[in-house]
Amino acid sequence: MRRLLIGATIAGALLSWSSCTPYYAQAEWIDPAPPAPRYEEVPPAPFADGFWVSGYWNWTGGTYIWVPGSWQRPPRRGLYWYPGGYVRRDNRYQYVPGRWAPRSYRPTQRYVHPRYY
Figure 1: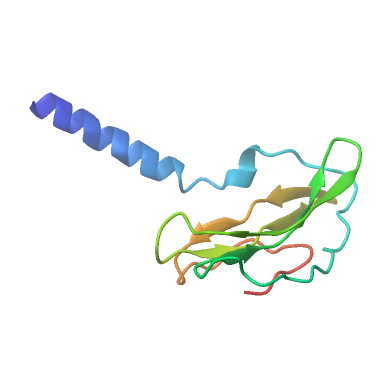
Figure 2: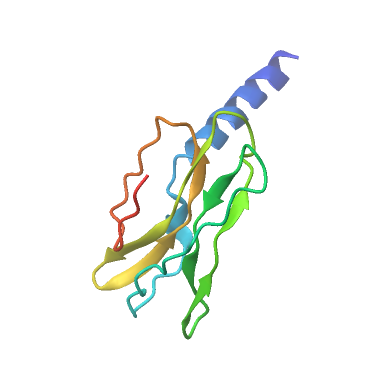
C-alpha cells in the first residue's frame, strides 16, 4: 500500500509540473504575421452562465482562416475565459490558445494583437 501511495504522489507531482509547461512550446511557428482580429458583434447570451469565447485566426498551413467566436459554458464554477493570441519571436508567430482559469490568472505572454479582459 505504501509503495502505491508513493507512486501516486510522484505521478501527481509530474502531472502538476507538466501542466506548468507552456502549451505553445510544442506548437508550430509560422512565418507570415497573423491579421488583426476581426470585430465580432456578440449576440445575446443563450444561457445565463455563458462566456463569449472570441474568434481567432487559425493557420491552415498555407493561409489564415477566421474561426468565429461562440458562447461557451465554463467547465466548472469560478472559471473565466481568457482569450488566446499570437506571440512573436524572431519574426515568427505562434498561437497560444485561450484558457479557462480563475479570476486571479494573468497571462504572461505578450500577444501581437493584445486582448483585453
